[in-house]
Image (cartoon, rainbow, N blue to C red):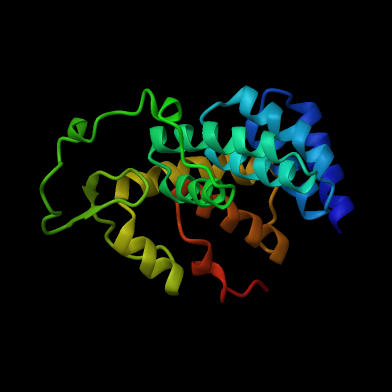
Length: 215
């Protein structure tokens, strides 16, 4: 099954050399198959295409560690932490900070250059009002969604922690994910791939999906 996924994503990446999403999916599939050396080159290309793709840094560092390139992984986590913080992607930022700590490192000041001042947030210092939520993805106060998108724990979490604007942005991105990766949402593999991309895009905790069943 892993080999089939790898070839599927490889063909998509070759057909769309400038598509960061297709290359990211290929890199993830290679890591899942323990082909880390190949994944390193693919994920470096993802970052070359999109320097702000914070999840790609996490995977690249993981692949570098698996190939015993600790120095390369540390450099990747430093750069990735800055990229993630600059976009407000707190989940991958915290993950890379933890990995740097495991290597006896702390995020360098250079990695944080260019990150906006928290005072740039027009909502700084106030709590969300009625019908609002401070979004875990954007870190801004956004209108609250009218209802949960799913009737389970994942949907309840999204309703409580993700703003309507960020959810609309995911709805637009999800069309690209489904079409470009040719996901069949009627199959467990397609459902899980969809959830993986939704989790990364919205900065949802991975443990949230631990009990989700795919049929």
